[in-house]
Every structure is written in structure tokens, then in C-alpha cells.
Length: 315
Image 1 (tube, rainbow, N blue to C red):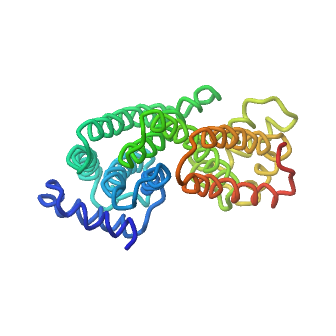
Image 2: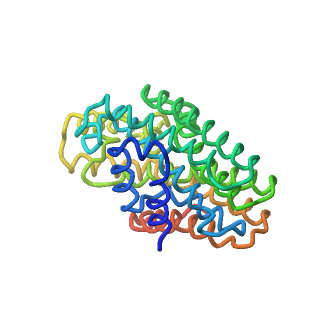
Image 3: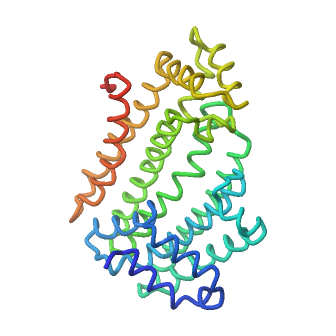
């Protein structure tokens, strides 16, 4: 039985799911797809010497919290694939609030020492507050690198930091190992954001980042760093926002390569990979492969895409 199957069974006993069938159904449907990010707590739990069954409440709680975040994010982004399109913004917002509450209830009510439950709930509450602030900053579409990292440190890093921290706590790790796991998660969250920026910016046809005028790291670099094609890039970007075809998108992406935006983005990601590798080496975990596989799952696809562009990886 997978961790996702165990999680589906587990939440049936949570009070809010028993009284809110629609939310329970939505959770089961989402869990059945084995969404990325839910099982980070399981990886952390097993890495510190815990078991999969120990990790089930953590994964269930983190899953609830991620669903809450994404329900709101889809409304803010006006995502046509978001749940709000089917049930309306009000009901989607209510579901988000309910899932937030369910996540905290799971952490406070699971079979773990009181100090562990309290620490996990505090981590989850901190993460949700930070993410809400990050989502607010993102609505302002920052146009500087400083603003970009403020959004990343609000929207992406806290979720990953808390997921690893909660997993380490429920796996029975010592406080210093929990802190290192949280630090690993914080930087890993930055890596994930940079990786997603890179992938979405270089995708064809144009991703929502291009169409909605968002400033991903590669696009931001091409806008604020002086280079010979800066003005042409700005013109192409406006055309893409207005619905231009893939030919102009490809021209803009070629400028990203020539101006150094792609190299800079990959360098930022690999620099952080080196940082988390050092953190991992210092933790001396019973099963570090659970962290190592997560890291390779980000690095290898980015390296492959970078090489497809005919570029050499930064040293």
C-alpha cells in the first residue's frame, strides 16, 4: 500500500471530513493522483530513521495544507483549471479554510508526544502565514530581483521547509536534526521555484508566466540586466502577452539564452544544490538517500534541458 493509499484511509476519521463530504471527496481525488510535494514529509521521516506508517499523519496534514494553498492561488491567478471554476470563488475559499483547519487538527491529534504535536502544528501555522504573505506579494508582480526573492521566500520556501521539518519531527529526530532538515527544505524550496521558472519560461507554447506578464527569474534577468537586445526582448514580451504566436516566443527564448538569463538561472539553482548537499553531508542521517533522490529529481531534468539548448553547465 502506498503512502497515498494510507493517507486516504487515515483522513476518514478526521472530524471535519466526516461532516463535510465534498471536502473529503476532493481530498481523496487529489490524493489518488499522488501529487508532488505531499510526500516530502514521508521522505524526511524515513531519512531520519522513521517509518512510512509514522509519516502518514504528516503527509495527510501537509496534503491538506497544500490543497488549501493551491485553492487560493488558483483564484488569485484566475487559473482556468482551478477548482473555483467549477464551484465558484466563495466555495473554493471556504474549502481552503476547511482544509487549513483539517491540517492543523491532524497534527494536533496524531499519535505522537505532545511536544512533537505542538512543534508540528506551530511549523504548519507559521508556513501558512508566510505563504499567505508571499501570495500577496506575488499579486504585485515584483519587477526587481529583490522583490522576486521576497516572493520565493514567501510562496515556495516556507512550504518545503515546513514539510521537511514536520516529517523530521514525526520521525523522532533530535531537535538539531529537525533544524537541519528545515534548512534543507528552505533551500530546496528555492531550487524547486528556480527549476519551475526555468521549465515554464522555456516551454512552448507560451506558459501563463509569459501570457500574464509575470517576472520569472530568467525573464526578470533579461528585463533588468543591460544587454544589446533588452529593448527587443521587451517588445517581444508585450507581443506574447497580446497573443503572438510561437515564432515570437522562440525569438524571446533565444534572447534569454544569448543574454545570459538561462545560464544565470541554472547557476542560481546549482549553487543552492551545493548548499543543500553540504547540509545533508553534515546531518549523518540513517537513510540520506531519501533526500538525495529528491535533489536528483530536480537537477537531472534541468541539466538535460540545459544541454538540449547546446549550453555547457556552469562550473
